[in-house]
Length: 634
Image 1 (cartoon, helix red, strand yellow):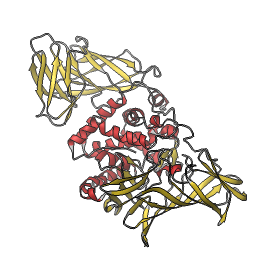
Image 2 (tube, one colour):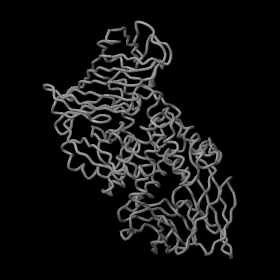
Image 3 (cartoon, helix red, strand yellow):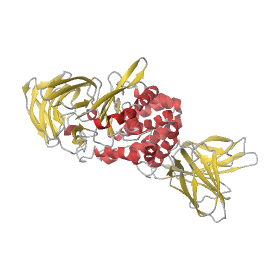
Image 4 (tube, one colour):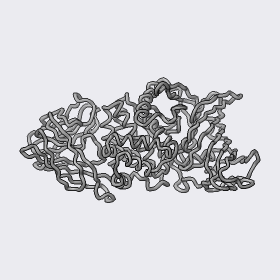
């Protein structure tokens, strides 16, 4: 799940870079999961393998209620006389039939439906049971089953992640057993259209109603099953692959249908990019789709993403989930970053490959968001706390950044090879995965043991800060001392290769030092005389509060301040320097000097209109230099 912005609207883009948009995404995911902290995960006895569901629902978008008939085909893993489903006790069981005969069923207070058979079912034998029910689903998830309105008409939609499926239908709510295939029949007033998973098989008018039939033939996790019904307008985009195309079906509000057409069209490029990087869209033989719903975010329902709007990053994030989250689903909410960290990072890859001007700002702000907290691991330590599962800084931002830094450590070739091997591992593909399986594939691809990396960055908390002291001798040899501090004591030291860029404004070079302990000394011979040094100029490393100073300089943290840090034109530069004048130097992310101004102490306005959009570093020079936080020029 997620929420993002429109590429064509630059001010929206940079409102994301201020983290407002991405925080809306994450808050929306939290809202979909804010339920009681007791008994969140499945309590049903896991003694069978689900093979197929026939899901039949009758709903009216004007009424918050449901009537259902759920037929579940299963294979017992041992001889059984009963099975259990996760099912809210707030709903009413009408009957349960086994071989067309009513059988005993008990609703437990623990939101469990226990179905007793007249005899024992043998292990390994395919069988089925049908549950008839009705009622008003509880609102525990704020998104599990919602009735609302838009532009004077009604809508009813579902969203089950992580624990909300049992609010509205009897299911096996776990991250162990995917359902092999499903048929969905939705009976609703005939003036509406119903969106759901898989391929639309038929829409049949029956008196005042319409029966909409969707069919999905791929394994699916319970929380990814969905429905939404309203007066949708429908149109399609098409994404080519080879000689074929994937249909991208868009179910949108009529009042938004014209505006949405150019916005959803960007998904074609995004899908083609992900096809190239990670293999063909996993559900290419069915469809991809969007259904608009009453949210400020999105949810990656398998083959039918629900979205509140059509922002560029939102669409990229939810599409990315169909590789990371749907085709391969985290096998525990402890590993939610395998869904959310990757989807966050892949939305950035759309910038890297399709709109490069926004790539550096994206990574810069993801890093700043990840380091805005000084503790907490990417590994989710409390899956009973939905706020912890969907923690913005850890599961999304830091999850994305440790993927990015891992790419730096192993190199692009091993990085993409390892990820593709992971996604297409027969034991994982269209199933569930755990962190250790991802780690195994990355280690095999890069040929090294990565325990050191993941112990620091995945299990460990916090992030490093670097102080780089450098000097230059007469032969243009730079001597560098690298010191590191940590924001949290769980990691005594972060081992990493670190890049430092040396430049004189005309010539530059980046040197990578293998940093193994704090206070380590390095040297490198250069072919030119550098004037400045920049730590990690391409933002590969999850870190913050870094300082680069030559030994003839002294670090000062209060002499220079520039604001706002995101601007379309002007910034205010404030200095406490006592000299009559000083030089302000502005460098782009390539380390090139792009602006120099003579300023007087105090407050000065600096016009950046002549500079292209991007990230810039400000340096004050008067015998004392200080690089400050980077400024984003829109």
